[in-house]
Length: 201
Image (cartoon, rainbow, N blue to C red; front, side):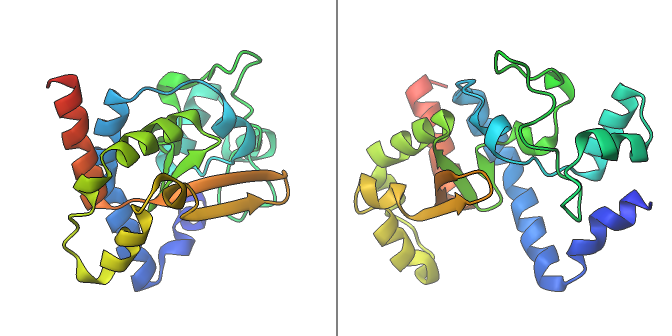
C-alpha cells in the first residue's frame, strides 16, 4: 500500500490545491490563538469526530508505536475512509479525557476547534469561548473590506444567535449535532489582536 499516493490522491485538482494552500497559510494564526485560549479538556472532539492524518502524522505515530503501516491501519484507522482517519472515539484518549500521545498528536488535533475554513463552536467548549470573544467584539469584525464576502459577514455578526447558527451540521452516524462558524485570515488576524490587547501582550 503506497501511503504517499493514498494521501495525496485527493489533491490533484487545481482548485483543491489552492484551497489546501489557503488553509495551510492560516495555521500559524490558529496556533497563535490557541496559545492564548486554552483547551477545556472536555474530550468532545476526541470522542465524536474522526481526526484526519497527514503523511507526517502517520509516520510519526508508526515510529512511536513500532508498527508498520498495515498493522497501524488495522488497529487505529477507520477502514471505511479512503484516506487515513483515526477511529472514533479516538483510540488514544483515556478514560479521564487525556490524550495518551499528546506530545506527538496529529496536526489536526493541535489546531482544533479550527477545521479548514470553519471553527467548531458547539459542543466544543473551547470553540464556544472563542466565539464569545468574537461576539463580544463584533463591531471590530464588521469592518471587513472584501466586498464579495461583505454580505456574509454582515449577516454573520448581526447578533450572537445568528453567529452560532451560521453553519450547522449533523453527523447522523453518531447522532451528533454541531455548530460551527466561518473563519478566514482576516477574522483570525483580528482575533489575535483582541487577545493580545486583552492579555496585555
